[in-house]
Length: 193
Image (tube, rainbow, N blue to C red; front, side, top):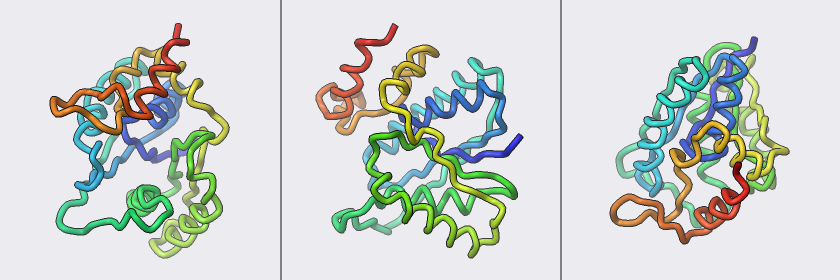
């Protein structure tokens, strides 16, 4: 049985992937990256805290979680194109890998990361050599999974309302219900049984 380190935001895709790994009794740890520029960071943190307890109870399996907190004045230039969030996940994921552990990413079929897949893999391969983790790999188990399947999994286990997906939370820390992500989830939830 392989060892796995999952990049877990507390959002829908990575949470659905995590429950699948836990229910399959696969050895898994998780990590997250908190950065002051990412507006959802506090909401994702709260979601992960609640979800961890729920996931362990549902699956009967415990897992270790590490939150990598980036603080200080370092600002990520997000106006230059590309996917800077992927870079943060990659760098911190590789640095947190243990021997013979694979980095698991929960990107689904419609994510923008696929436009950069070969660059992401190249960056992973180069960085892992520099830090001496040659036996580690990067995996994308949800590459061909769509959001409908993710939502169905979360609904099946009663986890959807505990994940964080809103892009513009209200002042009282609730989901706005109006942003692109809230509208997408609302539409897909209608089909949950």
